[in-house]
Length: 238
Image 1 (cartoon, rainbow, N blue to C red):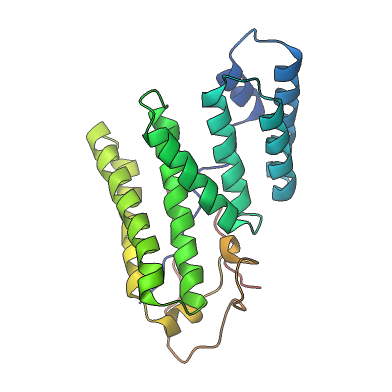
Image 2 (image 1 turned 60 degrees about the vertical axis):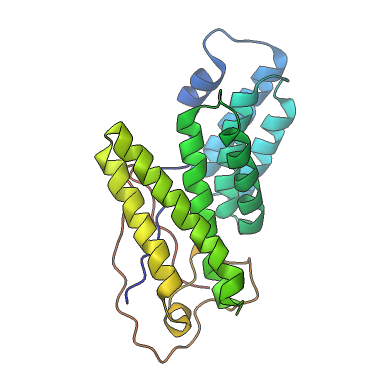
């Protein structure tokens, strides 16, 4: 059974110019917002350099300086920070933040539905990778199955919402993600152990990455999660 390696979904940061204009609006000034804009720009540059620890630091600084009442902007920054954490060997932190963010936004009728959908997609990805780790660490099915089931539910909801909007491309992508989560749950542990550890999982568990396996694992195929030209996951192992 071939194991699908998830790809990023066109994630990290809007271009800084578009981001600042979209988040803060034209003509907005003030010392604090100027500081926030500088940190967002620095984060954008760090993303380009794949320096995700710096990305996290810059978003933390942006959140610290964001004026009160900027809930929508804060949520966008929190989301981008969590995505960076997944690429900086901080999967557990990202997982917790995304769960809190999705719960918060789902309970807020005024929340931006587009941002909520993106947060839910990121949460499902974090659940997928967390399941991968839990299985490699030898946890029982009773422990890891709720995690992958939650990922499946999120992917299914995203697919259904995309279908309602008439977005067939997004719907197909989320259906593929759903199928990947199903395969992850069904795969034999020996097969999973024979695969390279995704970048999102490295440094987050006691497992050693690619483990020897007697199972014959088919060659991995390239997958694309959406049409955003997103970079592939680093699945080269340790």
